[in-house]
Every structure is written in structure tokens, then in C-alpha cells.
Image 1: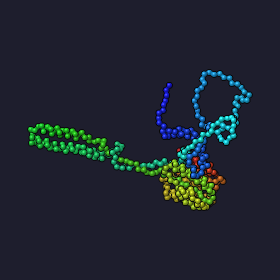
Image 2: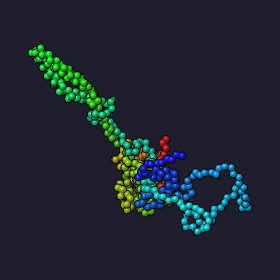
Image 3: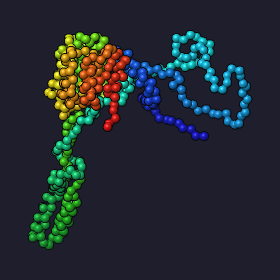
Image 4: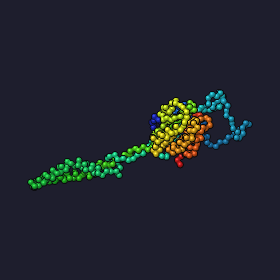
Length: 423
């Protein structure tokens, strides 16, 4: 018999792997709970964690056990109540684990398993399989494009970028530095030998000593390599960022008098969900907030969500302002342009055809994707039918959905931004 002893130390996050495996296993239950939580939460706590309940019957684990083995013979007595194929009714009474039931004297059950998911896990499940559609111009994964730029000389680099002139200059300087003393002594010893041979030709001992010293100096100088790896110099090439992964999202919200406070809250919930999605999934994206009634105005995030300004309804004012901002700040050749519009559909009658023409002729050719959300429990308004004609011209880049109550926000959001397979 052998024993396996695990002597590994328990890390601080020793249960992380098990938790991730557990979340994957009960993914369907968690996603359903997240969808229900988004619909019932208020604006202020939409991104917090969530308490998840899983029925006890869904957490049963398979087990191994020993069989009785051998050959057995059993005789089962018959009965007068059941025949083959009958189903036995569930025992009456408690034991279901649901709470609030009357007490019973029979039956067994198991309570639901309840656990808490963190804010990060909640957002991961909320925005899973979502993406901005039609990202065909540029990738907005946070990576810039780069161009190579000369940045001087380096002692290390690619052999294909070796600088021969600078390498030979460094080698020559090294040889001078290492052999300078030996060369000076060699010149002096050579002169001494010439004088000694002229003046004292019979002094063979000193002549031979000088000859040996000269020979040693020459060998010392010759041992210095002509070119060493220390001398090599390379052209240094650096990558200069050239930002090209640029995207902008226009958020157009109707704040006219026909928009009730409840309708505005639904619109705000939709835009908060969109804003969280953009900030979490894309590092490099700009958001332009536009509020409109009879006139449109670009505002900051605080004013977009909390301003109480209201008025009549002319939707085309927001579309014209969007077109002006695109022309002045966001060139379609450089930016991925997106737009999300929320309204109750109530518009000045003569203005709805103008909105259609503005979209078809000016805005949509520059848009990667445009989505319109109509927030109303009633039948569709004139603006909806005008936008249907826009969808006929731009079926791949235009979408419209209706929201009736808070429970529709998250399903509609997923429909609008569901990740699509590349064609």
C-alpha cells in the first residue's frame, strides 16, 4: 500500500481555482440570477455583487461506493397498491427546504445553497459575450499601432542592425587604451637597442635582454584582439506609438416633457448599463453625452444623469448636434463612431421625417452602429416607423428595440450588443 502526502503550503488564494470551477459549473443559475438582479435594482447599486441561490437538487455530487459483490438471489413480495410503471407520489408535509410551509411528520429535503458573488464576478457575468458591433475599421483592444524610429546607438541589439563604423571606432579605441603603455615602451626599447648596437656592439648581454623585451612587447600587443564582442555597436530602433484604436459612443437621451420621471429612470438605467459596459470592456473609448428637448446640448456625465431641465420635443436637434460634433472632432476615417438613442418616441410630427433623412443621408454613412431604444408601454410612435425605414437601408448597422419596464432593460441591452460572429 502506498500513501500520497501533499506537503505544499496553502496559499492566500488557495480556494480561487475551486471557486472558478464552481462558477463555471453553475453558470446558468448565476446568469439567470444576474439578469433578475439587474431588472430589480436601483440605479445606485446596479453594479454591486449579488446573492445567488441554487436548489439543493442541483448540487448533488456523484459518489463512489462498494457494491455487495457476489451472486445473490432475492424474492420481492408483491403488493395490492402498485403495478409496473406506477409513480409514487411525493410524501406530504415539510422537508422541501422552502420555508414558510406548515410542519409535517414525513418527507425529507434539503435547503437551497446560497452564496455571494463579488462585484467583479457580477460584472463578468453581466457583460459576458457582449461587444460593440461592426469593429471593422480599427481594433479597440487598447493596443496602439507603432512605427519604428531611430533612437541612437546601443551596445546590444540584432546582428542585422550592427553599425560597422561605430563598432570599428570602438575597437580602435579599445586597442589604443589596452596597448598604449606597451607601444610606448616598445618604441623606447627599440631606440635603446639601436643606440646600444651602435655604441656598444660587444655588449651582447644587454642587447639580448632588449631583444627579448621587444619580442615580449610585440607578443603582448598582438594578443589584443582586433575586434571584440565588447566593441560591437547596434542601431537602436524603438517603437513610437501611433494611436489608431479610437472609438466614440454618442449617448442621446430625450428629456422632454413627455418623458415622465419613470421613463427617464429607465433611460438612465439603460445608459448606466451601457457606460459600465464601455468602461469595463474598452480602455480607449470616448463617450459624448447629449440631452435634448426642443434644443440639444452636449453635457458632462453628472449633468446627463442628474439635470432636471426639460421642454418640448424636437429629436432632430440632437441628430444635428451629433453631426456637428462628428465633423469637428471625430473623423470617420480615424474613429469608430457609435450612437445609442433613448426616447419615448413622442416627437413633433413634422420632425420625424427630418430625423429619418438626417440619419440616412448624413449620420449613418459615418456610423459603425446606431441603436434606438423606445421606452413606452404604448404602441409605437411615428418616430419608430420612420426609423424602420432607416433600418431597411442599414440593416447591419442600425437596430431598434422597445423597453416597457425595468425587466426589459437587460435583455434588450444584450440583444443590441450581443457579440456577433465575423462574416
